[in-house]
Image 1 (cartoon, rainbow, N blue to C red):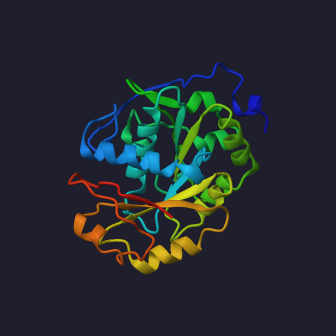
Image 2 (cartoon, rainbow, N blue to C red):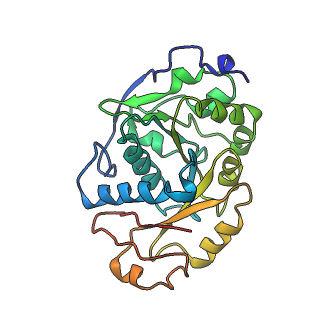
Amino acid sequence: MSETELGFSRPETSSGSCHWRSTETLVALGGGRSVSAEQFRRLKNVLFAADNAAARVVVVTSPVPGDGKTFVAANLALSLAGTPSTRVLLVDADLRRPTIDRLLLPRPRAGLVQVVEGREPVNSVLVRPEGSVLDILPSGAPVDDPLRILSAPGCKDLFQALQARYDRIIIDTSPIGPFTDADVLGGMSDGILMVVRAHATPKAMYRAALEHIHSTRVLGTVLNAATKSVLDTESYYGSYYRGYDTTPSPEPPTDNSR
């Protein structure tokens, strides 16, 4: 599909008007000064340092549902958008259980699915919450066969075209334990960021999730909802983790590069 067919012939602005439904979990919104917001700034700096500096498209996934991948994806995108002159796009590619869409009011009725199917131009479905500099590509309605959409040539064409408009693209997708969606999207990205939840994600599921990734590399892992005692115990998820401190806030992120 050409850029014109995808709907890039219009001016490069997001057309949708919306608000955040709730900002309770958006700790990085507006460059917040909380400890949690600072953790996301540290995550941003660690994630895109050294070998990962050139990574522009990052897929965020987790071994199982409930690990906090959407929380991490949304706040990482907000933190990146706070960098001057950096154009950032957050994509809701969890076509099985869209969650980013639920953060928006009104909830978008069209998005990634409709663009890939050729039913909507991308400029007509992009939204930017008021007071934000972050653009969002919603998922659209859930579909029975997400892999049909994600594996379609139009999906690859779309992400290639989006890279010409944005400096960083953060993609939230389904958990990689039960589904292969993240690995499919990984082939269109520069790497995968894994999210696990302290005292919740089974170690076996974490190891299996890493083994399910074949299309790209793992950029790092975020240990979500960690406490100092967990981080002091290096064997919690094996030597994959190195000491990063934690925060007392709900669902705080802790990052360690691979």
